[in-house]
Length: 411
Image (tube, rainbow, N blue to C red):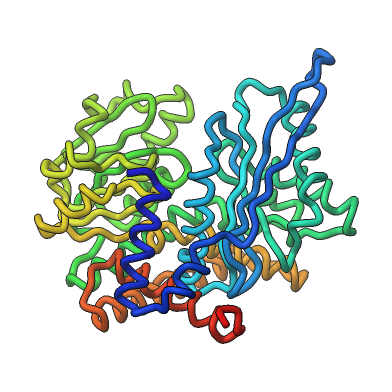
């Protein structure tokens, strides 16, 4: 099942549990606006090349729309639609005043030089600048984009609208980016894990962890778990997988990866098959890579008691069912990985106020938001007698539906 179908299914189930009117249910599913633009740029050799860029703005009942821009050869309108919708529920679960959006350009950033990427980003911004805005739609980095991409968008947008640091988040610190943004998603994952474990009277320091995906999110989560005394027994990324039943030395593994570009050949670990990571012996499994990695083929063999969804949509609905029957507790993506968008909100707030916070304050506020969201989510589980995924969806959908009704849109 693809991401859009799964998201729609979860939404419909939440709407049924909440007893939403069919009119409002329908209006919540339809995106507010879909934008598709042609971006033609001269390549470095002088030839012209065209790319298609788009932005789906899903809902703005609770505030400006918020979501990443990805540069990827398979930027698929369906997937972007699903991710925009997911951002609407995610921002509502975290209780930050945003709606959802997502965008992208169908290109392979690896095939473009830095100056070509800059030209492409500027043309895209020229095409959509009057449809985004500090109080309308605030983009952020995603797959294939980074702080530099945001700096180009900020500069191009400011040519039309005057200096506007709050137009994008995930910017370089020197242009108004927030301290703590780099670690935010991984840090949020750890705060979410701590909140969940506390419910069961458990602590990070007493458990073993396996992490699939060791990019930004996985590396930060691993580092913070290690610092708290948790044992990370297995890690994988595109280059391979390593394990150590006594716990990996994460700082040493990170510096090894930085030097060699890969995980394998690390002195303090044995190589393992990447496919076996998801079914490796551990207490807590944290998928931080792609969607759909847990499916009906491997769900039965998962040994973890807790799964923390740091990736978007890592568990497909078939696996969800199998794992629930086994009694595995799944902390859903729309809550577990909301640390990134929460610190993006802090960045936006700092830019609007023109007053920057220190890193300690960013992390303190993030912990407060993640912990509060978990208790609100658990409250929905108790009221509606449902699992954590439905608790999160009913929490998010209910907040958006209430805002929509209060504004009088569904009349």
